[in-house]
Image (cartoon, rainbow, N blue to C red; front, side, top):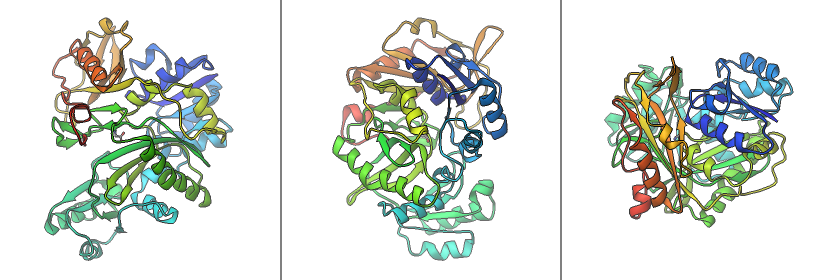
Length: 428
Ligand code: GLY
C-alpha cells in the first residue's frame, strides 16, 4: 500500500519511519516532510493545512491511506476533505478535532460522558469571568479556549493575576481569536500522565504510555515548549491504571462523540492528573504527542500501517496494542533561543556515525538540505531516541548519541527521564 503522511516535524518522521517498516507498505509520501523524512519517503511541497491541496495530492498519488500528523490540518478540515473524496484517512474530522481545538467543547463532552475532570466555567465577558473566579480556589487556571500554540494556559496564585490573565485573553486578545473565549478551571493536584490510544470511532486501543518534558530548562524550569524530551514506559502508569483510564475516560469519550453525531477516529491523547480521587482528564489532544511519538512508535511491536488502516475503516479489534520490552528515551536538540526567537541555518554534523547504531534513532524535527548540507530549520531540530533494556540504558544511548552531534548553538536538557529513573515522582 501507498501511505501519505501529512506534516513535517519529528512526530511525522517517526510516523514515516514506523509506516515504512510495515510489510504492507510499498511507499511512503510525506507533505511537506523535512530533510530526515526525505531519506525514507518522497516529499511533496503541499501546505498541510490546505484541505483541497492535500486532497488533490492524495488523489494524484492514489494513496491507499492518509495519516494526518499535526492538529492544525485536522482542525482545518483536512480529514473531512479526504473522506468526502472517498480516501481512507486516519485522523478525526474537524468537528471531532474540536476535542483539542476548543477546551470548552472538550469540557462539555467530558461532562456528557461522565468522565472525571475538574470543575470549570466558560464565557466571553471579562466581568462575568471575574465574578465566576470567586467560585474557584487558588491557584487559578485561566485558559484560552482555542489553539494558542501551547501558550494559552495561565496558572495564577492570586486573584489579581487571574484578572490580568482574563483581560489579556478577552480584552487585549493576546492569543487572537483563540482567546476570545476563556475557560476557568479547577486546579487539579497530583502527578500528570499522558495516555495515548487509537480509536476507530467506536472502540479504543491503548498505545504504550509516554511522558514528555514541556519546560525548556532542567528541573522543569523556564517557559513551556512543544516538548524537550520524552520517555516510555512510564513507571507510574501500570496496567491497572491504564485500563482504568481506558474504561473511565477514553471509551466513554468515544461513545459520547459518536452519540453527538461526530464520531472520533484517530489518536486520542489524554492529559491526566492522578488526583487523590483517581485519574481526572485535564485535556484532550487529537494527535500523537511530539516528541512522545518518537518513543511510542519505536516500541510498537505490530504494524502501524495495519493498525491505522483498521482504525480508519472502523475495524479496530484490540484494546491494547502490542509493545516491545525495550525502553525508549528521546532528547530534543533545540536551537539557541527556543522557545523564543531563534536563528535557522546552523550546520548539522555527526549524524553519519549514528546511522549504523541499532540502539539510536535520529528523528528530524526542523531540518532542511541546501547545497548538499544538512541545516537546522526550526526551534526543535532533532529528537534523538535511545533504546535499551530499561530507561537507564535507553537514556545513556540517547545522550551518547546527542554528544556525537554538533549543531552550533544548539542545546538540550540533560535530565530527560531522570526522575523516572532515579526516584519517585516524575517530570512535568
Ligand atoms: N509534547 C506535547 C504535545 O505534543 O502536545
